[in-house]
Length: 395
Image 1 (cartoon, one colour):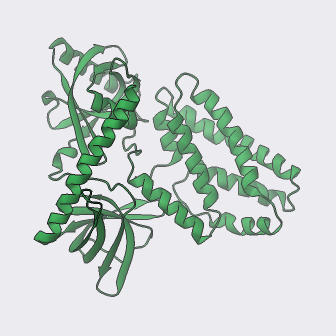
Image 2: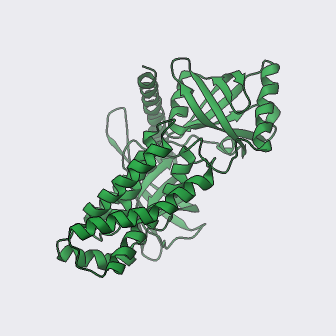
Image 3: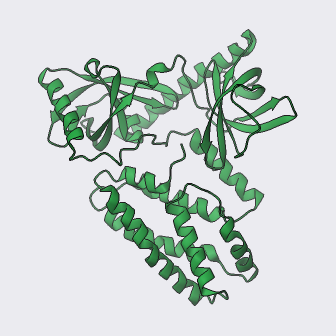
């Protein structure tokens, strides 16, 4: 998912009003630029003040308000500054540290969230890296992006437009109030690195703006990472309810949800388990016409795989036949299992630095056996990893 830092920050501000934080970030631009200009002046930047000001405005806006990674507008300025020995990253880092200080005082006053700070730091670093065209640094960015894609740190549900005081949100509260009166449990559902994690949860209490559940320890671990869960019950019909976490009490395994929305039963449409790789796994795609592409595995099932290719414009179309080559690890003995199979392009998704390509595989029995063995091994590893995280979280 291509998520802007503004989205990430606002999603994590569970008590914040959307307009308030948009205005905070936009209004802070003047203070940020003013601070950067003062630091630059102290370092005696020999450049047109308006050009310097434009550079700092561009970097600030690219960091917080744009999903576009094109930093071509600042490249020439950066090159000239480097020749003069001016450390622009030092100036920007000092300015952003001031911003983070001011932001954290307001945003985390009532409930700290270090994950939000981490996302802000990553976005700042990405923006600064984009000003440098070195191939080595680009490879570092790509590797970090791939590791993020195969990790479990994405938050795919946006609750920022849900008003907890709205009639729609109160209707969800009443819905859970009725279930509690009838003494019925719900099922909570999350996906951890491809594995379905679903357990029953008891409704402990229903208040004006929140609903508390007692959850299974394994579910608690995933919810602590995702900060949301899919809530399922037969009375919901063809839909599920998505609930955003307000707080978690690990000792009592109590989770409070406070903002809700309807969601489709997309996860029920999955016929096969999809797992994410343990580490970076290169993939080669070949097709007629001299098409040779290199990418990285995002996830794989017995019938399909998702590949990230660090290119914006791909010489591929939906329905195109390709040949896939990759090496999967046999976790039983650590050996490599080369897999080569024909596949068909199913769909695309835009990502920072490139696109992901979903491919339907047409494996032979021997290749299918390798993929199946790999998926079974990864399931065991992922369950073990989740259990270790839960034990650490609850300790």
